Length: 350
Image (tube, rainbow, N blue to C red; front, side, top):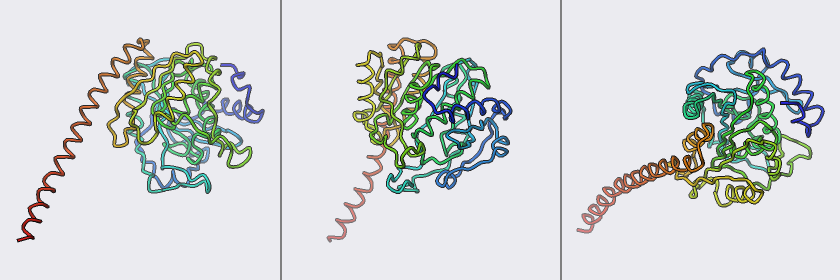
């Protein structure tokens, strides 16, 4: 890819990118080992020196907007290898951000991250797509340095873009397929507008629509949410194939308010975008990662939209059965307690 991809960037950002790409090949590329990333670290922000970054497996030392970052990734070839890997960007961590104080609204929402789970996700996508898969750590979590308060900002979007370019040069990739869930589902659209080497782009339960594009501080990319309204820029990806996955009963990111408007906008612009409606099995009906892996596998392997929809439909029926069983079990547990309370109450009235 020519550096003209970054024509809209400042000279400082382009210069930092060029310097980074010259040095990036010197860092370790060994497979990642199991590690627990503590929630306390992700809440206060992760800092790392260049030497500390180099000592960890599968890392990139990058500079964006004058700030150094260690980006962690988890590469899998469990299902095969290819020159256009699947990149997975997962959802936000640590609960909502208080925008007035720019801090965590409820720190109790944070949890530790076991990197084995990230590797397992990369393995799952690799097996279904039969190619290389890379789980890319988001800013301030999953092994990547920085503050996760800057999630979905111009800073994070550009950091991920530079990381993809560094990975492209390190492994001589031709391009990427992108899957994102929730907050990651927004990032993949932003990357699709910036890059020219994206093949399949799938957004699951994505936080796509937002009005928070105004900076908390003027000209501060760490507190400015990026805009993805310029859908015409997606045309630069000639082979781009997009899909959106949603659970209509998502209690965390409402489908009608977040994903459906984007699908409508894309279709009005002339794009063919299947909107796959599914049934998640988690309590908030939000997690669609397994559906995303199946859809991405079909897309990478060149399956027709109807074939992918058929496979997704089979998964929906199985998930519906799981949800019914869970509801039946919950009702069954509540019946003995009700009966016991009724007996006690009757005994008390004698």
